[in-house]
Image (cartoon, rainbow, N blue to C red; front, side):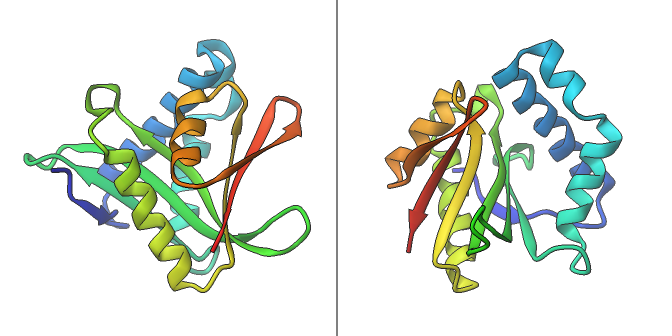
Length: 161
C-alpha cells in the first residue's frame, strides 16, 4: 500500500524530490543528453513551486509514499486550457521510481488527480508526452484516455468526463 497525500508546500526536501524526479522522467524518456539539457534544476524547482503558489496556478502535487514514508512517486495536476482555449485539468507530470513500478502507484496517482479535476468541474483531463513514453501512454490508455499525435514527436492523451 502506498498512501497518496498532498505535498507539504513548505518542505524544501519534498520540492527537491519532485524536481529531481521531473528530471528523471525527462532523462528516461528523452535520454541523458536531451533530458538533462532541457531544464536546469533551478527551473524545475521553481516549476514545482509554481504549482504550489495559488497566486500563480490552481494546482495540486500528490505524493505516493511507502510504509516508511519514502516518496515513491508523484503527479502534478493543474487547471489549464487546451490548444483551443477550452478549460481542462492538465496532468503536468507523473513519475514512479523504477523500484516501485508495477504496484498500481501510477494508477492511484492518476485516480487522485482525476478526482481533483472532477472536483473542479473540468470537462476534460489531458496530459502531453513524447511519443516514445510508452509506459505513460499505456497507463493513460488503460484508464480510458484517447491518444492523438500533435507533431514534433509529441502526443496528447485526453479523457472527457
